Image (cartoon, rainbow, N blue to C red; front, side, top):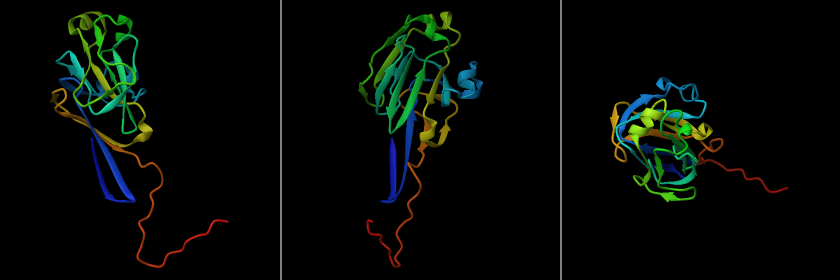
Length: 183
């Protein structure tokens, strides 16, 4: 995560999410599931996995681990990040997935979140493609994904600029000031 402060009244914050899984980046609109392709669950990218270990993309708190073990949600800098391994993997009822964290856990970048049996998932689910999404897009000012191949815990996957919390406060001028008294 990076934060840059240009002045006490002008704060711009961005978050860099590293790849939670080694693989090849796929644009979200190419995911063969309309809920993800049409960004109904949030925005981001997807990964065609080349590994079976999902790691924390940033320092975060685990908000939720799905009972089937195939998906989890993290919270970092006000963002909610969903990592969803495979398509239609909820129907596996946990078979092939081994979550290593639980809701409420604090994790550091690169910590192991879950492992999965790629052979089992590939033969019993629709796809191994893994969407990585920011689900609360109202907190996002801009989001930029990476293309190509990425290595888990090492390569940047998404750069997220947070939206301003409210209207911008103008910087004070050197001229006369007017203060109001409470009524």
